[in-house]
Amino acid sequence: MELLHLKKLDLANKKVLIRCDFNVPMDEFGNIADDRRIRSAIATINYCLDLDCAVILASHLGRPKGQIVEKYRLAPVARRLQQLLKRHVTLAKDVVGEDAMQKAKDLCRHEVLLLENLRFEPGETKDDEELSKKLASMAEFYVNDAFGVSHRAHASVHGITKFFDNEHKAAGFLLEREIQYFSKLMNNPVRPFAAIIGGSKVSGKLEALVNLLPRVDKVFIGGGMAFTFLKQMGYEIGASLVEDDLLDEAQNIMDEAKRLGVKFYLPVDVIAAEKFSEDAVSKIVTSQEIPQKWMGLDIGPATVRLYREALNDVQTVLWNGPMGVYEMEKFARGSSKIAHFVADTYATTVVGGGDTADLVKRVGVDEDISFISTGGGASLELLEGKVLPGVEPLMVKITEKED
Image (cartoon, rainbow, N blue to C red; front, side, top):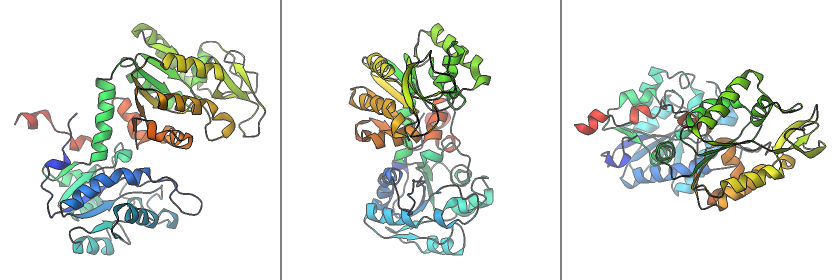
């Protein structure tokens, strides 16, 4: 998949609108808890500024649902951008209102304007053409560097691309890097290639699993989703999370793995607890012997050893989804140990955004992972083999390349 390249645009002295993903976590005091998504956009922003551009930045934060919600204003993002860019960042009072339009019109080269939260506009999530048109009118060029929302057909991601031809739109460096990593993973990985798939539900990862099976050599299952497979195998899983309507699908996946010669690993032991709580009584039990009314909340030490042993020879690792309830310290050990092992391996390691990205940062091994995606939902849809609505308009078509 080849994308319209930012470096091929004639940007010098022009006005450019960059769709970024500044949807960062905030603490209870309104401070940014993790600025990785902001830092990830800096290379694209600086490239445009170095070409004497006037730069307009657009992003959403949280889910205000088309209403102006004070806690979702982008003032903290503007302050952090100022620190990282080492220049003044003007924050508009609205998105496409009088203030934003005037500030965009008056913006001079080397200046940076940040629009207010895109999702304050009800038309953003509806891919509203009028909103797309107003956003497009602010600049001569459009750059999408927001991988984390590129699986959404929103006005600032999808609709806006209709108002720019291929000489006036492109993918930013972050978006391009994300697509390149996942394309290589899915089409030309260095083998053996292992996928570690966790999280709470099979339903959320079903399509990704089906699409991954023909491409990988080994699959390691963890998290709540493991119990649907274990129940299908006839094991006693107690009160563990299970999706009874997907038992047949779980069997189909195991059968397909066997048919393809893919090694399919499930937990051999778990940390079980009486209730979903940090102070719950817990114990290590085999996967076949989870007591009634108890629930499995983490993979056990034998599973950690098994997974580590089986991961020893792999050259590429994709990890999407934690191995247990990592938010509770008591049930984070399995995920933590796997994170340390993945970080220490010499394999190419890719973490698929969302909870897994949060996990490796908590454990402190994020610097040792080859690539951490900035988008959980977007990366999952790529693994499912889908073309993202925000990426498709930026793809170089075969006929264009031939011309």
